[in-house]
Structures are given as structure tokens and as C-alpha cells.
Image (cartoon, rainbow, N blue to C red; front, side, top):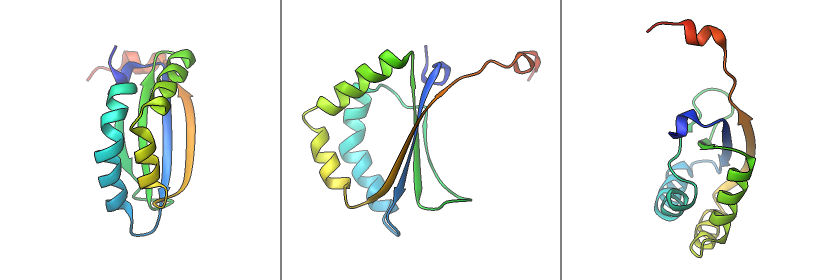
Length: 114
């Protein structure tokens, strides 16, 4: 099952310090992404805010179940390199919000022909 079809999504929003988005993205890509790809799998996507609250970096990861989420997060947190990312990004992150959201099947979506 690809990441887009997962029934549970980790919708994570980091508020980044003013004028530090470029530095955060560089640190995230260099230090976190290799670990996240190994432990969490492939992401659904990454986004930055344009309208509304500013300086926000959003990433989405798909999971098969709450147990899958917990197991992969435990593997991420236990990875020997993850502490280096946390230390390198600590001064860049102002706030973090994590939501677990479930997919909903809408019958009307299945009737739409593209």
C-alpha cells in the first residue's frame, strides 16, 4: 500500500523561528530524512505555509494502524542518529503540533470520473 492510501496519517506542524526556515529545511533534510526514510518509510509530503499562520513546516506520514504508528515512532526515537537531529534543530523550532487523522471514504468521490 502506498503512503497516500494509508488509513492513518500523522499530520505534523512545526512552527519555525522567524527567518530560519531555510536553515531548518537544510538540517531536517540532512540529519532527519535519512533516519525517517529508514524508520517511518516514505512520506506523503512536505509543505510550508503560505496563508494563515506563517513560518510553518508541515509533513505528513501514512500508517496502517495506531500500532504501526507507535512501532515506527519508537524505531525513529531509538535510532542512534536521531539525537543529533534533535540537537541541531532545537533552536530552530518554536512549536510543534502533532495530529493523527483518519481517512474517510466518501461515496461521492468514488462516483467522480476524471
